[in-house]
Image (cartoon, rainbow, N blue to C red; front, side, top):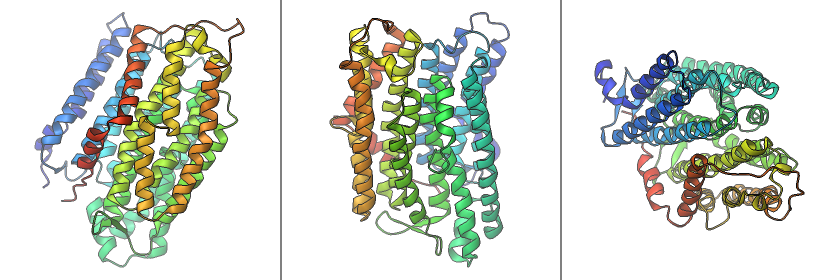
Length: 492
């Protein structure tokens, strides 16, 4: 069903809570001297928004605001994931030495603005809304990545992010304009109906799909649209790097799934999907998936900076997630959604440990982790080992279960070569992840490294993420069931 504007307000309580939180932060910032409290206000706002998003699971599906956005289980799933990502980023920011001093109000306000844009990305059912929400997330991300104004790396990160983002945005909206021209509508359901039952020019449709895919490829840092990621991840504050690597990437995948499945494909029998005649985009994405995971892992082998290493790791994991996107089945999409939850746990955790060490030593390179377990940092060293081995995909950790579902979906659809490439890349990744673990436990400190201590604030998040990574490696049924229930696109 489609409901009016006033009635639609009752379905966007999570977004309204974030808007109120943003306004409250900007107003309170003018009168409050203890700027640290602004982060706590932001944390409460996101927590309330998370509860409001969870309650939406019981509401009926509906188009909102004249079919600009939609309320369905798919949107609820990603809103919950975005809220958890924002909460982790704010929690890290409260314990980070980088995020201190002036501009606290702007920082936390923009962080909530970015989360708000992600909410709308997950709900968009119109090309205009999809573009506006993506651009809103991008613009706030440019500012947040350059938050450390007196740090040259941070300024460089923001500038490169802006340049690459502008080019990708222009490419994507040009592709969307072709889709609009072919379908005569910006509504996803109507686009699907016209392109499925009509006779569109196949060359024009192929060009439109490629250009649109380029824009989304930038958002998820897929090769060859990944060039911004290493520099931005290195220069941005660590909490923002973690937020971009999980929240922004997941938002890109959410919108990618919205556009390429309900809009540019149609459901077939037994949980499979069929792409539009003449536009074999799964084969194109298959190549992107293999190249992305391979380049990401090979580039990470030579990295000495942990943030840059995790940036290339993030690129590789975008390739893994695209495996589920290629197979054109609900099983593949469910595996993608489950893997995003797993990736949230282990990647946020890894960046958190990097932040803890950077707080104590001011270093982000691998040498700064030398003998970490023997200079007061046994707890973060153990946690980091858990996160890195989970990123590799070793049992009995959550990363193994996530990759198992992805590989199973790929093999079931007979993409054996893609599965083989994924396994080989997982083996390659073990080398650079294990190198960090070896440095922490087997390389003894030479006396020049600063001792590392963990505050109770950072320790609570670190152990929470560590425990969740282990528990989901042996008991993942509730999460995969949630992903399965959420795999429902409302098309009217």
